[in-house]
Structure formats: structure tokens, C-alpha cells
Length: 98
Image (cartoon, rainbow, N blue to C red; front, side, top):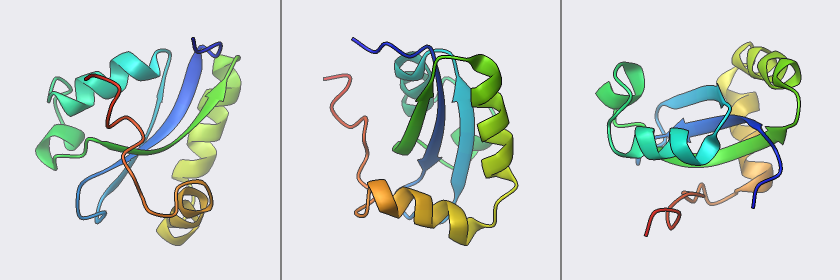
């Protein structure tokens, strides 16, 4: 059982050419929505549904501040953060909904 209420996460597509940063109060639900095309807009348009990184927080303000910080980074820095924890860019949620 997850004990954190808020998450900052990165999604990408199968080519890793697009990266999306988001914040949510329910990571499992939100990733399900992305994977099933239930979120209209950017992620649905570019088939961005592969969870490659996330951080958990107990405080929404910390999560939002972190999301804003990351969104201000250049792509190279975001890639380095992902690769430190997930060097193969595996889909961390691949088996969540089996």
C-alpha cells in the first residue's frame, strides 16, 4: 500500500522523444487514465503513456513546487534524473493493471 498521497511523475512515449511532467494525488489512477487515453490533450495526442519516473510526497505544496522546478529544467537534466533511477527507461507501471 502506498503511504504517500501526492506524486510528481514523468511519462514518455515508446520512442522517448517526448517527455511529460505531471503531479497527481493518486498516481495509480492517473497513470491508468493516461494508459487508456482517458486524459484529453497533449498526452493522448502524442501517445504518452509510459511511466519512467516518479517521486512521492506527503505534502501537496512540496509536490507542486517540485513539479514546477522540474518543468523549468532543460531536457538533458530531466533525462539524467530518469536515467539515475531507471537507466533502461522501463515502464514502471507496465504490470500495475494486469
